[in-house]
Length: 113
Image (cartoon, rainbow, N blue to C red; front, side):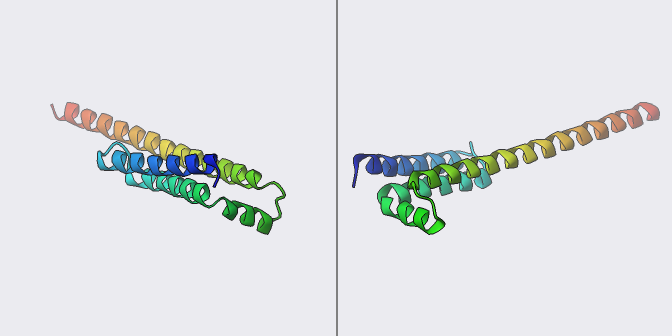
């Protein structure tokens, strides 16, 4: 096992512990934490068994195995960013609707007086 494989595995374990700590302290929602736990587990698996990525790359038809990691990583991050944008748009919509309801309630209270 190469030194960089060991470092990748250790980083995966460290990331997993950090994510669990953040979820436990309520600094990170469980849904978001599950994504990052999956990333940490993948780093751990690929760090401690580097031949797995070679076999996967050969199975997909990619000649240079690290390319597969880059492609999957970029795709995962794009999905995460898209999900974050969807949640942001949903929150903005909900805040706008809440502000409208508050304004309508203020108008109703003003009319009663």
